[in-house]
Length: 184
Length: 183
Image (cartoon, rainbow over all chains, first blue to last red):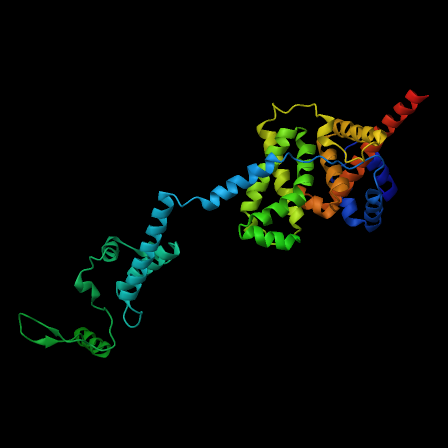
């Protein structure tokens, strides 16, 4: 359909325009210009209206705005604000007490992770790895032995109560030697 | 007071800011609501609902369109909601005075014209009615109308072209009838 046929089709009010008419206008700058010119002409007989809303409408709009500003916060709003502030303070305290992370990985890290997750409202910070023991750690019931690092840069000598001797874990080289001796 | 100044005051919660915005836009927004709802009380309800929520959300206005267009969009949707809610209650007859035409006093013929415009508008499809109101009473551009209605700007051109043609047809009939009466 060429431009003239398209215009005739659109001028026929008995037929509803379809999507292709809009597509044509999207692609044809000449037709766009022609339509712009047509709709920019003054519409004969279409005198402007002077209808105004009644003065009551302003009062109905402004009163709720004023009452909203002057109204004190409700009990629940204040309770929520207080709770949020308290949670924030506790969170910051827990973060401070857990200290910066360096050296061996201990179960204190999940505690910090939990606090951070709580504060940021996100559960993406490794909460999925938590088991029941971790949950007890989070709650502050972490057994002291769980704080012993599994890997350490320097060996800490352990005291054997029965033999009365101090001993350390073997170095990696030594344990290799030990296994080799066993096999031979 | 400019739009920006009024907006700034209103954002600070100052009544003079709200008042300035209301004085500037309430008339045209009301006429848009009226063209959709054809009932003065419903149009006032829609205007109240729209401006109350609009004034409360002024902080969310980012300035990527004219404030007028932003208010139009809110009123348009508020009017559609009103219409949906009270579809069965809307009276079809509109008092011609409601959509009066701002004529000069003493000019009876222009008063008649205005009343005729209202009558003709009321006989037109809803979409044609509010398109003509937005384009020729409130001087919104095709782009702004497209933004308010959420449609393609070229689609607006086609709709407006056809709405004009429909109005001209009815107006022509009215003029022909007038001629017959006088003859």
